[in-house]
Image (tube, one colour):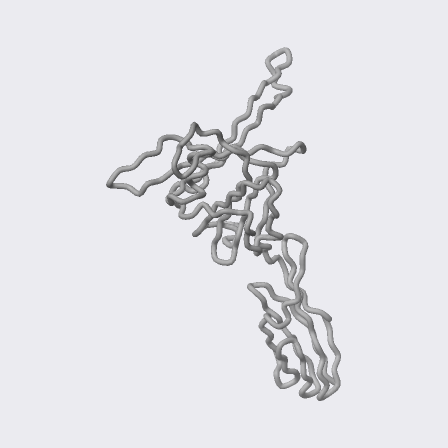
Length: 255
């Protein structure tokens, strides 16, 4: 079977964050924590996950003879749900918006920012509402002695004027490794420096010379450590750098 197992996701942990400040600062990237404007929902039901529902009105247009030629689409609506297991200040404000600690009033969902974060090891993916969302109880809520108290919320996502629903942040995926220079000529006893550069799917790069594993095919002619090649004896060697499954080489000639 063809494919890349590294691109298959099995999310082992997740969080939901809520901000009542519609101008809250977003994290700079997937590796940056959420700031003080964001409140953590707390423990979530992993079996329920983050189900997503899309609603849209469609109208098919047919030509004579019954041939479908167009489909008009409008009234798109997206909701994303989560099930909270904690009774805390954040979930209380979602369950009973506008209520106080001593009085419960008829709920009127407030406009909030909502962020969904899933994690697997070092891999992180975030969906943060680009405009705002309204979060309301989805289904029934109650208490009993046999089950954990839980609250399932549905977040209706309102797009921006340009139709953007979410800002998406992900951990960059390594796509390649490049060793420079590709060839190196050294005199006996001379030391040369190589650089290993990692490339990622978001078009960024990083110098991983210190983190890469370096190997010489002919240590009798040239040895390598942390990217520094030392010429030992006249001859040739292939220097290989490996980083997180990606490799590249440099051809070294010693005179």
